[in-house]
Image (cartoon, rainbow, N blue to C red; front, side):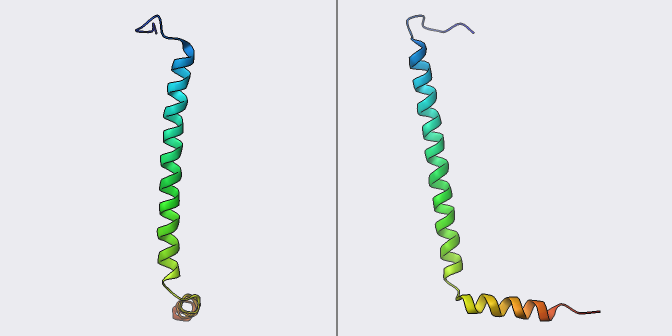
Amino acid sequence: MAPSSPQRHPDDITHHLLRAFGVLVGVSIVAVVVWLVTASQATSSRLPMDIALDRVESSEATPVP
């Protein structure tokens, strides 16, 4: 593939690739942080005792043959 502008240096191409890769990594990190924050808020809104009681009730609700 021939470069469109011959005066462009390979360093410029790698710089653009690194910048695009950095933006992609930054966006993915932000998305993961937002997902973790929303997940922690959803679980922290319930008390751990309620979660434990739900587990006990769900295990008792399963019929034993």
